[in-house]
Length: 101
Image (cartoon, rainbow, N blue to C red; front, top):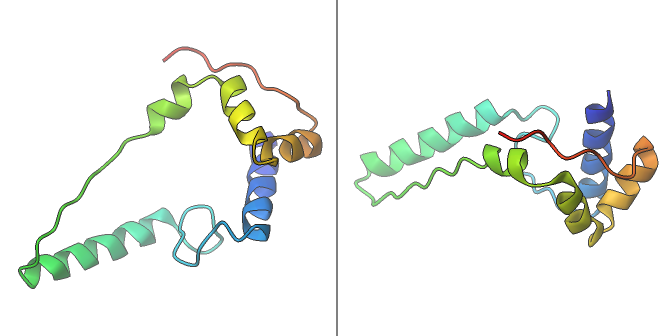
């Protein structure tokens, strides 16, 4: 429940500040990450078929979110006013640090 409130608050803030482009997938309704991945693969396949050079970097940032202190993340978000708004609307000022991975 708390995750949904935070997501809705973040999405509302991001849309209000026009931070999410129409090409964004994942945090937008009706646009799944799977659709984005399929579109990306189609584009890359077409480029290879046209014998164009293709370089792809895959970054796995899951561990970043699991290892960075939530307190530090919130302090960084507070620079943009997002964390204060989220904390106020959800009733939480700080969340506990995540367990070590």
